[in-house]
Length: 623
Image (cartoon, rainbow, N blue to C red):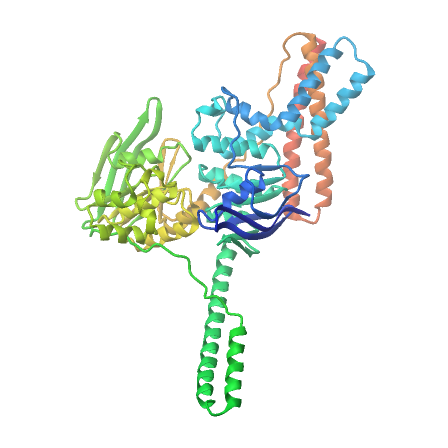
C-alpha cells in the first residue's frame, strides 16, 4: 500500500526558477526513507507541501487519507501557562475524553446503575483499554526518559523553554500521538547522544512510515532503508542506507563520466572522418553524401551530459609551529553554580597533536568547561598553557559584534585584509557574487558557522577548539570541514553529538557525567565497546513494583479504586495472553523469542504489583 506519492511536483517562489521541478517518488507503507540534498534544495518545502501547509504549482501529491500524519518541525501553539506535562498529555486527548466520561458515569452509578449506563460504561472501558488508556503514564515516562526530558522540566511552562527544549518536547508529543506517517525534519538537532540512540531504536521498531531529513550520517545509516536525493529540483533514488547511497552515487558518477568520455571520443573520430570525406568529396558526390549522412547520424546521437562534481569549499587552517611537550595542564579544576557542581577535581594533561572529544549529556557543562579552559569563565584550580600555544575557538552559538555589516565588510574590518583577499577568502567558502553583500545578521545558522570558520582559518593556531562544529551544516559542508581538519596537524579538542565526526577524529575521549570528568585514552569505537560491556555487567534493574495506593475519601473512593484496579488487571492479563500467542508463533525465531519472553516476564511483574494494590484496596473497602 502506498502511503505517500509525489508525481511531477513543481514549486517555484521566483518565476522562472523552480525549486522543485518534476519531482517524483513513492513511499510504501512502513518504509523509512531519507530525503537528502544540500541546504536550500527544497527538502523542508516538500514536507510543508505534504502536510498541506504550502500549496504547489503543478503535479500530483497523495498522502493516504486514512493515516494520521505528523511533522516534527511544526510546533503547535498552546494556551498561555500550559505546562510541559499538559503539552505531552495533549497527545492523549481522545483517551482523556473517554476517561472523563467514565468517571462521570462512575459517579452517576454510585447510587445504582441502569442497564444503559452499564452497557455504555463497558463500551467506553473497551475503547479506553484498546486505545492504550491504561498505558498512558508508562508510555509518557518511557518517551520522556528516552529523549532526556527530566521530571522537573515537565512541571515548567512550555513557553519558558528554549527553542531546542521545545523541539524535544514536541517530538515526544508527536511520538506519543501514535501517528501513522512521521515527517521528521532534523530530529536529532538538540538531542544528546543517548537521546539520539534511543530515537534510533524507537524508529527501528516503529510500525508506521517515516520520511526523515537529517544531516546525521550515523543516524541515517541506522534508520534509512531508502534515499531520495533532491538535486536541481529532481529526485535521484537509492535503495539502501546512507553508506549505500554514497557508494552508489560515486559508482553512478564514474559510469556516467566513462560513458561521456567514450561518446566524446566516438564523436571526435566521426567528426574527423566527416571532415576528411568532405575534403575528398569535393569532386566525388558519393563521398560527400556519405559524409553528410555521418554528420546527420552524429547530430541524432543522444548526448550524455558531462557529470559535474558539486562545488566544494577549498581552504585549510593556517598553522603555527608548536615547541614543547605540553599544550595545557589542568590541576584540581572545579566549577559550580550555586549548589550544583558541574565538575570538580579535574586533573588533565594534553600533549601536542592529540585529538580529543568532550562528550556528555545536554546540560552536563561541556560548553562551560571550554569557557573555563579559555579563561572566559572563572573556576577553581589551576590551568596552564604551553608558552608557544595559540588557540582558535569556534563556539556553538555564533555572535558578530556588527551584525548589520556585510560579509565583505566584516572581512575587511575584522581581518584587516585587502578587498581582493576578502573576495578570495569568501569565495573559497562558497560566498560568491552578490552573496558577499548580505548582512551578517541575516545569514542562516549554517552560513554564520561557515563565515566564522572562514575567519578562523586565516589565524595561525596550533590548538583548535570546536563546540558542535557540524551543527546547521549540510552533509557536503560537514565533509568539507572534516577534510580541512584532517590536514590540521595541531591539537584538536571538540564537543560534538555527531557520531560520524567523533568516530573519525577522536583518539581520546573525555566524558563529563555526574560532576566528574572521566578520561578514556582511546577512540570512539573502543569507548562504545567499553561502555556497553560495563552496562551489561551492571545488575539489571527489574521494573519497580507499583506503590500500594491507599484509598482516600471513604467507601465510595475505595470502591472506585477497586474497580479501576480490576480493569487494569484485566487489561494486563489480556496483554500476557497476547504475548503467549506471539511466543508460540515465534518458537522458531530465537532472537524474537528471547525478546518476547523478557517482555512477558516484565508484564507478569507488573501484574503482580497490580494484584498487591488490589488486595490492599479490597482490604480497606472491607474494613
